Length: 511
Image 1 (cartoon, rainbow, N blue to C red):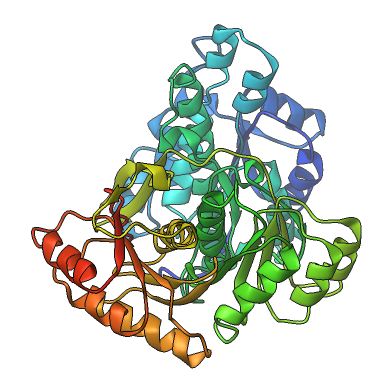
Image 2 (tube, rainbow, N blue to C red):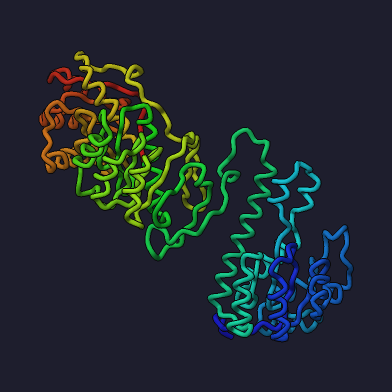
């Protein structure tokens, strides 16, 4: 028997907390001659509509017991839901006089609403649904043969099946409803878990998650994607299309970067595939925008833009001449919003004043890696001078700027900076020399002189080759974490060639 077959619903179990919207659905089911099984308040409601209903007790031979805690938890019910419609299982159903149940309709006890409305622990515990969640999971597991309607939100799906398809469902519909059912189950269990952990001092990842909308797709169109979290605590969407998986990854990178510039003068960063391709700080935001864009106007196309200050109308008008995906700022002037909302798909996000997360997570193998977030704030006063030449004031400012930028590039990473503007960057290279050569080539491609520029590295130099290459390009100052057994070789080269080098003591690998 094909597992992808359509099935006609002949019987249904209904057990719901909220009766809202149930009457027209039950009436359509009655019109189609579907046998309805129910219990408790749901049974009474259906009977009040003068529609025949079979009580669960007819099959279980047990009344509702333990103050209603146990009603449907019985092999006579779950056997009819979980049985595969194949000979071996069907024979067992016949042997034990178990009815086939083709559809399960459930609406769970309102646990979250109860938590929000009372501090009475006993009342909250009683709103943890056991039978309902079990029915949902059982029906969803057996979706090849059973239709699951896991909440009031899916009544419209059920009505479509009844009215437009005369009670016949496709494999695709059942699969989709099963997916929605497990989303309901996951959300419900998460809410309960969060309640039981509400006294924890620092919420873990699992306490913090909450199901949001399904995303359009993942990194690529063939990948499904979802967001777990409370996005509205961090950003407010003012305009544009729905955020995609890739948008969200870039937005996260942009916000983490701009937090390092939150106390700086007006700063603009442009990111592409999570890497900053243009960053600049100036006294006026429009000048920061122009400088950031000049750093790599080609990569900026279709990128994510972020500002550390409110966007004014002049800057908005200039940004609006280029195609971008997302623009983020702590605020926008009214006139800036008028300009930026002219194009319907461009996403406009207002960044809220929210602390950075203290943990970061990454799925790997069959588990999750957790680590402290890399939120270290760099202050040059805490660095160590490795060379005899002291940095000039302008060099020190640029080294701080470079160190903030290189922290947010994929390793191995190098940043070249002059006058608080990123001139070139190399990232994601297997060799630090290659990262430096990439940064130099990029700067030269866009016509920048590297004379007097500074170089920032996300990790130490195992050999003096990078400082030698930098010196030959006119770079005068270097900032790096230090920690190599051959640090002195790089220091000696700088001393012999009039360069200055600062050691931060903090590596910033980003894999």
